[in-house]
Image 1 (cartoon, rainbow, N blue to C red):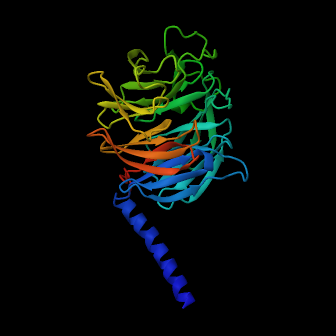
Image 2: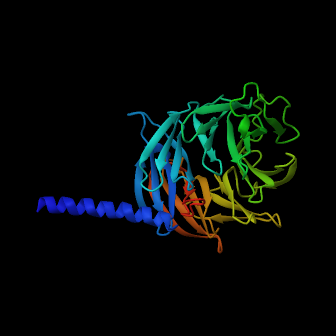
Image 3: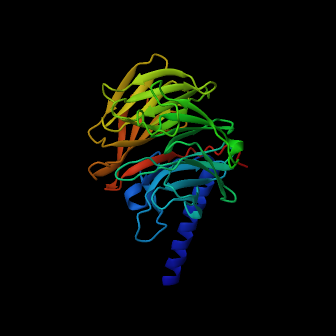
Length: 372
């Protein structure tokens, strides 16, 4: 009898994994990955039901906080990656089973990531000074996803944090959190000795040398518009509270959206698939700021459970916005909030645990472009 029960359990587990793989192949799996920074885990959630499927362990160094911070998904090669800001690793996981495949040490507090269209390289930015942490690193790393070898480009400015890649993978945009400059990096020049990427001032009052940490804008994240023509930049300095927009062809300033009235300290941001709206996690206002990119109008979503909003991501069809509440300031309950973008209403608040500090998130669509 005992052997029969064991066999049945093994069969059920195999059936679950097999069904998950079949669903992914057919484009049916729809998962959301959320980094739980304070407990060294990544929560995997069903994007349709809001149920937690599993929590994935990211503990690389026993008895030491690794602090998983940001996650990206490569649906082409069916893998996902997470940065560990304290221990300096990037981890690689299987997208179907969520099992650890490999790891690579990059050091210097790896923070945000971008991946090229074919999944051949991931690009890693640096953390910024926060909550007693400091980072004077001026390097952006590139990791070969097959060999996990690492090369870099030195931008000459501290804490190159915001990062975005062009749709063809030829250009990487990076913004310093401290020096108020941003940079255009030609991705085929990574590892080239003496290479200096083209630099741009965020504002006219910024000092000319890129190495001066003026702290005027404190850029947190940058994203590229769906048409590839604009670069959106969240300026998180409390005296600014702005979204700045620049041309990807010239680097010129195109627009500035002030979130001063409500959206204090813009944090992570994303556009809808059509590029009509920009959604911004407004950290100190406990709100989502929404910019209508056609009219320039700004409006807000509030909820009593929003607590230090951090990461945002959007579904492929643009119908659902996902946002994490990190509860970073008070160590309270972290949430994943699911928002209906048609009505701009919160339809689900998923509890992620007391003191877990939910930060980055990524949405799997199951689309698997270029899959066999």
